[in-house]
Length: 132
Image (cartoon, rainbow, N blue to C red; front, side):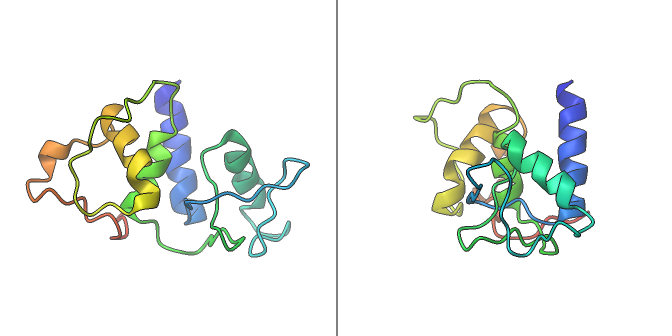
């Protein structure tokens, strides 16, 4: 199940093009992103992912469905993938993670999605876009 959720999430993230770092959800539980009209080809997938808590969107009320996905954004999503507890006192050991992504990166490291040992520079290069 975990592998299936991860596969769907990664495909959805790459297709939608945005993982976001902030949330904006209406009182009815539906997303209210000004750049994702109901006619958008990925609107229902975006809605499902936001409802599930995987995606959040941006503070300015956008989702940016065509934008590149950064490593920090993907780490934030991976950090939300399971119910495993996260020890907030443990450091991810990366020196270049933006403040909004610190908890997500820490969670992704603790859950085994990111191996800090693979980054000898101590930098995740967090703002770099993911490559396919």
